[in-house]
Each structure stands twice: as structure tokens, then as C-alpha cells.
Image (cartoon, rainbow, N blue to C red; front, side, top):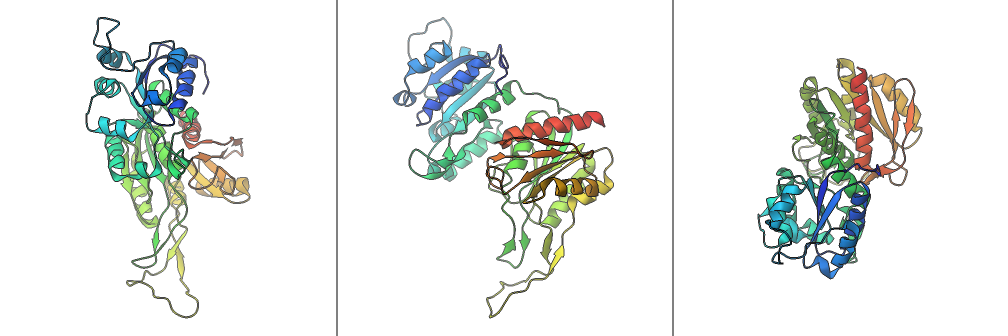
Length: 404
């Protein structure tokens, strides 16, 4: 990010709504201007309670639109003209109110009316109280819009202005701008490619009540699936259980156990050009599953385990022209273990991360990765948002395709 004129000749309409994070919209506008964009800002009445329109007018050097019924400055229908001119629409922050309006086709102010008239991509950056964000109505509205092709970025986890800690904080400004750039000026260099991405944990049943699993959130795999879709790929996402909404437009295949994932992956594999296997798959499963809940008894409980199929190993054995990318989440000897996996499993690249490092473990919105290749080459990368890590991985995947 930070490449001058990356958004040259692009018109971005920024909608600012009434949340405490409205002040961050000013930084977003400043970043977009530095990237060469022409920026027009629409503020709701509530947004003006948090930030003065003059702030955005000074940054954008454009008149800020604050109401629907002011006297027109030009002889055109303003909301239609602005919607037609826009290369993309960004709403930052997006409250539950504006998300609900868009989801239900309500157009009762300048912002919602202009969004309704827009045919360009729309990026929505939610920010709200953790309980409000978790409200099933809000989640239903977000899912509905995502399925209709609206783009979402965030929210993140952390301390909120209301005093609660949890999901609802506005995504980082850099993450928002990166997302907008990907949508507006993004590369379509994976068009025509079919990718299989695995994500999340697996669950190995012990009895009808309990199972064995791990801490994988699926965030890395879902971020890669989203980025690959945006770059033009046809994406199959085979995912274990997560709390994430699958990216709009991907072929989503939910699974539970390692064996289920193995079966689905092997079925899809012949159809694809490449595989990125981020899923944290259980190495072992209980040899037998109790038909009834296992009751507590005196003494130790001994569960006999047997190995699950090694999905990457099996893919490597039958690899034809596909590019095969694995992940190695380790706690020690990162490079040595990763290089061993490359040779053993016939991989083209492995993405290795030390999950004991802050910012690189399961459930984080960031990652710290090393890209390791069969010739022993190691590329180290600093801590980045998982969306940025996704782009790095896909750039290398494209090189591997070109070298085939």
C-alpha cells in the first residue's frame, strides 16, 4: 500500500455514518486522496454529531453532502449523478442502522438513496457495540448483503468505546483502504483458474456429546478464499466448523471430521489448478465412537486413537499439473519441520508460521509467515493482516502457475 496514483482517475464516494469511529473516516479519506482518488463524502445527520463536515471538505477538497433537500448546485439529480460517477462506494463506519437500510431497500436520506442508485462495488466497514454486532438481525442483514455481492471489511476484536471487549471495532484504516483498492483496482490475474482452499479445524467425535478439535478459527483460509475470488479465480472452499460467513461467490463445502474433509477434497481435486490447504486437520481420531455419552467413572479414561488420512500427502502422490501449497503451524523448529513436509508431501510451497508468536497464533486477525520452497529458499515476512498475507500467498501462487 502507499503506491502513488494507485487510484488515479477513480471516483470514490465515502459515506460516513453516526458512530464514534466516524473520526477514522477522515484518515481513510486522506489515504484515498494520497492514492490519487477523487473523493466525495456524504455524511448522515448523526455523523455530523461526531465530526464536522468541514473536516472532510478540507481533506477531500470537495463539498460535503449533508442533506437530501438542499438547493442543488448543478442541474442534475445529485444522488443519481454521484452514483453514476462512482468507481466504488465505501461506508465507514457503517452502523447497524445503515446496514439494515441497505439490506431492506430503504432510501430515506442522501446516503441510503445514493447507495440504492449505485451500480458500482460497495465496501462496508461495520463498527458497533459487540452485542449489537452479534444480534441475529444484524448478522442476517450482513449475510444477505454479502450474498448479494456487497463487500465487507471487519469488524475487528478489541476494546470498544462502550467499554465492552469483543467484535465490533472498526477495522484498521490500512485494512479498509487495502480492501477498497482490491475491489477497485484489484488484479484479475487469477481469472480462469480454479482453486481449492481448505480452512478451519476438524472435529473428531468421542460420543454424541463430545469431540476433539483445535483452536483454528478459519480466518486465514477464508481471507485467502475472498482474495482469490476478488482476483478472478473460481474458488472451492472446504471448511471445518467456524463462526465465519463464507465469502460471497465461492463454492462452499462444509465438513466436520478429517475423513469428511478428505473425501470432499479428493472429489474436487481433479477439477482444480491449485490447492491451498490452510485447514488444521486432526492427525488422529478415536478408534471407536461411543453410541452413548461417556459417563464419569473412577480412575483414568483411556481413549485409543488411530491415524486420520494425511490429505496433503495423498494429494502429493497423485499430483499432476496442480500447484500444491501447504501450511505448517508449528511451535518449534519451524523451518526444519516445514522443509521436511515439502519433500515428503511433494509440495510446491509451504506457508509456515510459529503459532507461539504474538500476532501469529490461531484466532488472530494478523499472521507472521515464512514462505518455503523445495529448493530451500525461505522468504520471511513481517506481521501483517491476514488479508495482506493472502495477497502475498496468491502472488507466489501465480508465479508457481507461470513456472509450470
